[in-house]
Length: 301
Image (cartoon, rainbow, N blue to C red; front, side):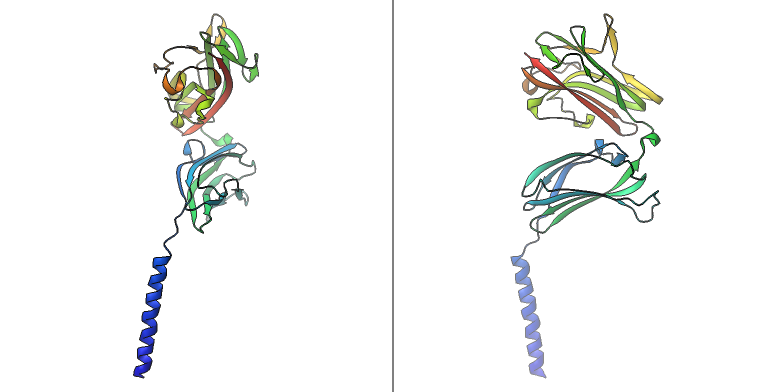
């Protein structure tokens, strides 16, 4: 009996020893990490049925990425008009260590309204996984307190209209040094507080903001900034105005030393020949809703 007890004790000690050695030889797997995550415009964690949806995340894999997936699942205990799930997987990031995931996709019109679970899943080839889970709202545009839309956008050069509400009266939209660039825009279906920007951004900066929160004033030539407060339902905000009988808005001279808010046009955003985007950005701070539009512009400096 004593011999058996000694043998059992030996086995236990040996097992513990090898378990400890195994833990020393097999460190914990490094999981993928995500930063600058935006689930919906301005990270509002909301989608509108039948509309474009924005997703952004900067990823660092533990080893290398094998897949990136999004799932929108109905919550247990919630009531919906119909059963519905949504899933997208992107394999284009396979084998990548560091990457930016910037995706736009359309939310199906048949998605029932309600509160959902939004899952952002990154699988790593080392066997680890990152899973972010957020509460997520699906809504119909008709039930939104604000639904900002770029209703009018008008651009002119030296008081001659060259772009009017998605119609290119000249193409490309070409500006030269000392030309006066006039840009006007109107946002409708808003209320409460918000801000509207128009800005010129050189394509070489590889910088394409979609929300006001993404604005980097070191890379943008701001033409105008307009704020509003306490608007009633179904209101609009506009920078449109007539100049010598021509509809336009705020102006900037190509080659000016300062932009429309007084910032120096120098350094990384100094004037030069190239392809630019005229970007319209609106954010409603009361309801955390955004919209944007981008129009290509050519500058010959």
